[in-house]
Length: 145
Image (cartoon, rainbow, N blue to C red; front, side, top):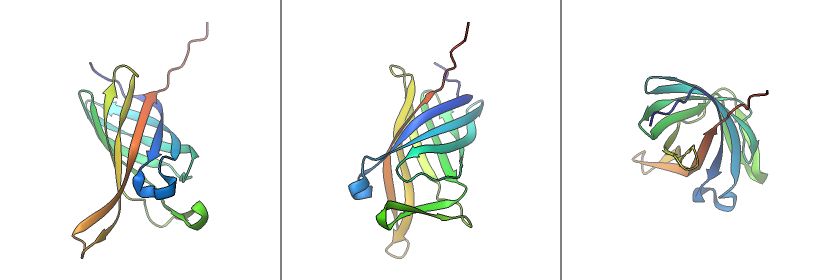
């Protein structure tokens, strides 16, 4: 089965256990993807939910069979600070977030896990990450007759 990634996609990002009391909270997003052979690129925009970044993110990755992996990097860095408010650093890009997933033929969507580095410890030898799950489904346009 060959999957055509060209076009509009919508999905949900769910925050993992590292987010403590915010674990399980969701971000709704839209993406516009382009595919040339097995290479994908595009733009993703957070629409609603907890901790959204108002700036778009760039997507670059690969698809092989039913498996997809890509990085997403916001054009500005954003962090959740006290009282769950968002602080934007427009001078720096966000960290590269790694997404891995597989196409689910039953739901006709991608599902998988994501991981984002947030720092290092032990003299830079160990990377600290936050994780979660994600899914996305292609937006279909109904034909008006």
